[in-house]
Structure formats: structure tokens, C-alpha cells
Length: 56
View 1 (cartoon, rainbow, N blue to C red):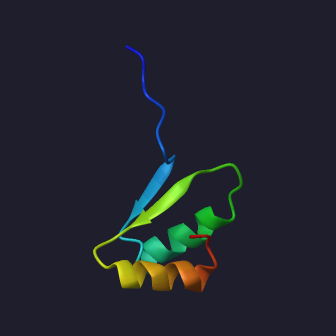
View 2 (view 1 turned 90 degrees about the vertical axis):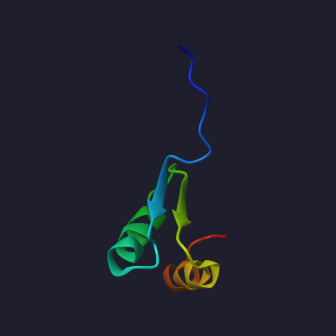
């Protein structure tokens, strides 16, 4: 059965927590990897994004 291409290789759920932030920061340095953050609060996700210097 053929598979459809996925938009992201990895999605970090709970990225606003301590461990999630560390994982997101680690993934930010990986080239060629498409990843995203997910959580309950958009404003907190934006805060983590800005804190680790990830692209929007």
C-alpha cells in the first residue's frame, strides 16, 4: 500500500514543558529534519520558539 508524504518528520507534543523545550532545542540544530512543536497554548509555544531561536 503506498504511503503519502508527511509534512513533518517529528512533532514535539508538550513543547512548552521542560523536557519538550529541551527536545525542541536539540531538534533546532538538526539540518534536513522537518519538525514542529505542539501544545495547548499558542502564546507559550511562541515563547519557547523565540527562546530557542527556532524559525516560525
